[in-house]
View 1 (cartoon, one colour):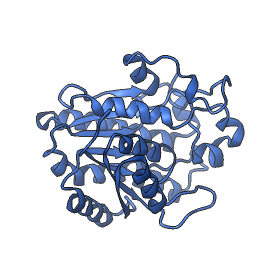
View 2 (cartoon, rainbow, N blue to C red):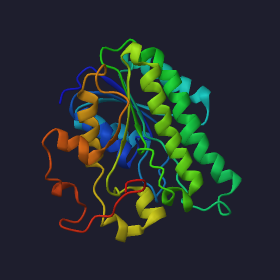
View 3 (cartoon, rainbow, N blue to C red):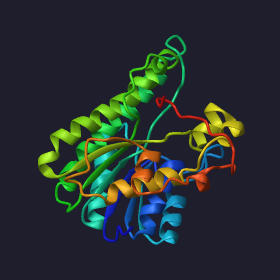
Length: 273
């Protein structure tokens, strides 16, 4: 798929899913704005905006590394301004940055609750708000948010309601933007994996190496994202996609290559019954 000449603004693109999407689009010739906090490497997480930019350019794209904490609108605006100054506009926004804490109500401290909502909800909203004027000028503008279908099964609320409502808010923002910006031909869609993905969060916070070995690589999300972003923004909007379904719509049903451990039993992701 060709994304030559297109500029993608990606939050949290230093590692895992964000970086995988960046590398996929870069391989198609895209310009990538790496907007994230990591300017010094955390040994537990790996990667910085600068190392990600180097990988993006090695993959065939052009990169701009911008330090940006999406909790602060001045940093968001600065990153957007630098992106437009460098590349002339923004065609694609990937709302990938997110915070997670799978804790119950009594274990969810005010600080952790606020962090998830400041990044997942407010940050996603403010980044989109800053990018919309530039997306409006694109020939095929897309907003893609990494959030799940809104599944009202009580089991997805019971154990970690604070995190759940923050992620569902991201999806509801997406649905709202699809309607609000339809007249501008700006597509707004959400994307979520059917199974767990081998990310730093899975390895460090959720299930360690055992869960990582029951997961897929971030490449499946990157490939599904590329399919969505290559579609007409006028026609493909307002969807909460699952990665498997996106690939199946393109005739791709053999997903064995995405397993971290070939043939291993896969673990279903949150919010997908």
